[in-house]
Structures are given as structure tokens and as C-alpha cells.
Image (cartoon, rainbow, N blue to C red; front, side):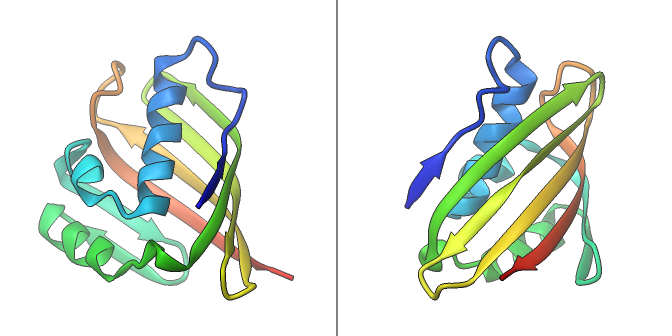
Length: 125
């Protein structure tokens, strides 16, 4: 898998955290992801799914298969206080591509864990 990272992270630990989390999703690095979410995490993939709690979150990510991901590009990462966002694109070996934006809410201002994710995914031509 080709990974193209954002230059937005620079000196921001929160931005680096979000970029690393995004890459972990692309790689299906579930152990990394689960160590960085709260027990009562909420995740909405707008128009597709909504889960609450770590058990449902685990079931959702278990269904995701990164073996078809050929490239992920993280375009921008921004964070402020208890919130952050990442946008970019994913290209698949099948030839499909999609744009994404994940908006995160941290459990605290130190950004130690994620308590909420809202994902927007749009197919690209």
C-alpha cells in the first residue's frame, strides 16, 4: 500500500495522532485503533452505519478489509481543542476510489482517546 501523508502535522501531536489513526484504519491495524478509542465510542458513517460502544465498533472494523486498498492520501489534518478532522482519498486495487473526511471528538483536550467519529465517504470517478 502506498501512503502519502500530509505536511499539516508538523509540530502538532494531535494532528500526528489523527494521521496515524487514519493510516491504521487503511491498514486494518485494529489493535492500534482499539487502543486509542474510549469504551463508549460512537461512530457514524454518514448514510451507511452508526455504532455505539467498543463491542459494536469492534464488529464494524472486523468487517472492513484493507487488502484492496492500494493507496491512501492524507490531504489535510486539523485539530483544535477536543476536535479534529482528516480528509483525503483512498484508491483501491479494483480501480475504485473514494474521498473521505473523518471528524473526531477526543475524550479530553490532550487527545489521548477518541470518543466520537463521524465519517463522510464519497465515491470518486
